[in-house]
Each structure stands twice: as structure tokens, then as C-alpha cells.
Length: 131
Image 1 (cartoon, rainbow, N blue to C red):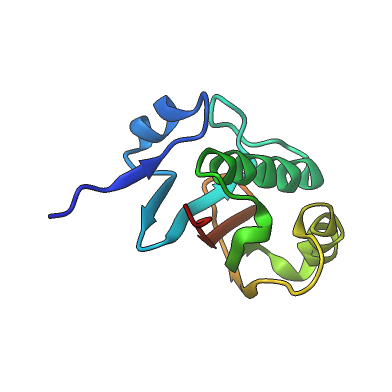
Image 2 (cartoon, rainbow, N blue to C red):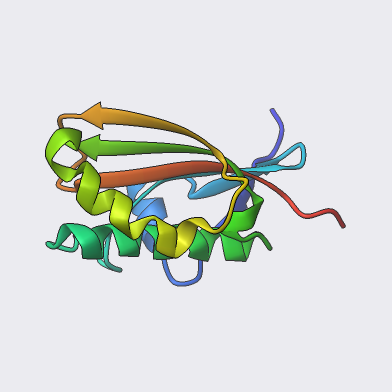
């Protein structure tokens, strides 16, 4: 088996090790990032939905940055939303703060019933910079 090239954001390695998964893996010119939620350093959720979405993006950006990427390098996004019918508008008004300008990445949105106490999760694939 090939050794996984894991990317850890600063200060959160213990959280990932405790939960037994990698935050991101570099492979064949791409960065595959695990789903990010609005978790504080201890792993607990921010109670406010907008704050939770912003923190999920901050956590995502920390991983992207650790790999030498930005959100502009993201080519594919999957979002998971608990009760999207009631939460979609709140979440979508926060996205432009992080999304950047067109052309936008591809997007798949999935409504779910449970996210371990969170309301929003974002998972991405990014193209690694050359060099």
C-alpha cells in the first residue's frame, strides 16, 4: 500500500488523531479534504448557524493553506445540510464571503438528518499548485 501524504492544519492534529481520520490527503496533483464543520478547537460546534458556517470555512481554509492552496484552487465542493429547507438561505448568504469570483467550482448539495451535532459540513477537492 502507498503511504498516504496527509496534510494537517496547525493546532488540530490531536483532534483528527482522536477521531481516526485524516483532514486531507495529497494524491496525483489533487488535495482531497475531509468534510469540515464549524468545530472549535475542542471539537464542539459553534451554536449559531452563521458562525458555524464561517468556522467551517475557516477550518477548511486552514487545511487548504497547509497544503499551499486557497479556495481558488477548489474544483469540486460537496455540502451537507441538516434540514436544508429551513437553513439554506442562512447558509447561502455566508458563502460569498469565502467562495470568490466566477468561474465557481462544481457543487453537490445533500440534505441530511444528522451531522454529529452540526448543521453544515463542506468537503472539497482542490488542484494542488504546480511545483
